[in-house]
Image (spheres, one colour):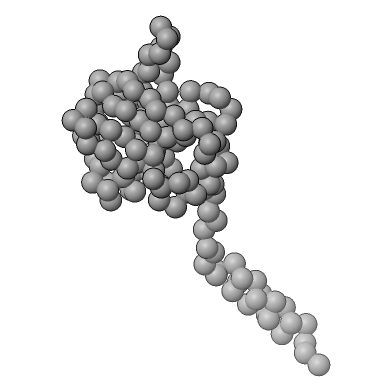
Length: 138
């Protein structure tokens, strides 16, 4: 029979090992379909009013005029690292640049879109979506 001291020492080791084991990070990212309606494609043409380079997504803000009304759309792109791997930098787009954004409209009907592609003023098309977010890639 083991002594109480031996049992407590064994329990202490188990607790020490359990609390010292590395823990895999939980992924909180969600599919694009959770917030955006993949059946509602949207094409936005306008000027960049703001760009937010932050995790987990870069946001492009585009002033869009239609039917005499103007709205500032928030266009969610992939994260900074994903865009950088595709050749993007903070200098790729500037405030005032004219762009066309192709993407999917927010489910709640707000002026928010999941951007998939941006057509620059020179006609160059660039992919800005995250390749693993569940949205159609083309």
